[in-house]
Image (cartoon, rainbow over all chains, first blue to last red; front, side, top):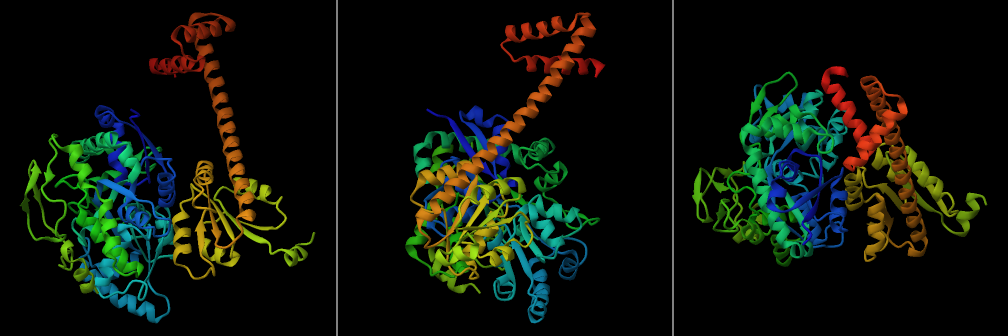
Length: 402
Length: 204
């Protein structure tokens, strides 16, 4: 059996689990050897995956669904048997704009920042220079989180403000040049903008949806079936890497590894801040500890909940302006593969939830949930506007959105 | 033949080459210049990329796979109404082999819908060949640099042996070669080890 897997990734902090599984030998111990291929655009990560240059990829979750549904490209069914992380993104505005909407002291509140921004957005629209935001990809959680927040605050994306794609390495530059007024991007790119004094962080996406799905391990469906045994080994290795990643003991050494030229090729100090949930929101400003800014492992965070895929599909329909389609929704839901996750981890110490779908955003406080194996306590998980996504009533949910 | 005359007989295809490496772009450009029914535009600057593409209104866009702006360009093609006809990636989505060759070479192509495959195919094939040629050149350059560095390390190791053991140069080299053969390693690796050890002993 060929036990080598090639994994594509973009140089972002949340590519950490495959990198650490490789570097710390968790992959070798699990019986799989990894070859990591770095690229500079999601388009290229996807091309390599679709045309067989890689077996799996670190991928923005909505893109895996878009590829499956044939949005932007001919349809190719992808599967995501493992969630590589939740959240970890922030909204950074040009400094003068940030100071107008955030208030003094710390990170803003989504409702207050949104209300202040709404007035400014209206003025700018009237002046013929609408506010412009950059996101990393149109099929990214960044795009969906930003739009969700703006719309819930009464700011209509594509009408009141413009949103376009800006590659992460160019975000700081785009803020500096005034090409955009704000960005929604992962780390270390917010911190890079802050440290250059061209942006200030106003919100983390964890404030918009406390447990928002972010990156997945994506594979072509047929490759997953062909290499099922090796993929299950990979899942076990990624789980070990997850445990290692969240242990404060390892933060320094892991930041050093991720900072290397072959991986993120960036500042170990900025990476260390991100993985310890520390955000420098303004140059010369306070270092804010925002718990669960990045969420890589606890609470079975790596479990691919089918309801997460369905929520992403609602946002795809919403912002692509296409009608809700039951068959498409079924295909989108099928991208997330809790069955593979379960089969890989059954009999290990990893906790496995009893259900594969949940009502998203409904937990007001910590809740113990039924499991197939181990014990799981889920902490508070809400959307900032209090709206709840019930996968049993997707059309009702869509019709209730602004 | 003057361009204007050519355009009367057969509309020239407008090809945009987007590459942050000016050297590679010029190699592609030079290759494509052999087609007399093409007008070529090279874009190496990231800023204002979309505005530039809008002006050029290309029939074919060639872009290197390592370019971070690919996501920007793809979004533009997907949502923009600036270009009159939709642009699809690759000539023939069913032709996996040519797509694979293209990905292998590191070039992506976007082609206006409705162009005759017979006209596009030779252009894309040539782009793939030129990209491959460029990677080979780069590899040769890297190899040459590596060889030069190895040469220097071997010289250093020889000097260390000559100084510490008081042997002449040919003898020092012979010892390096012997050690390499005994350990099944390359002479450069043995030399590297000697130089490193020498530094560690505080002689660096």
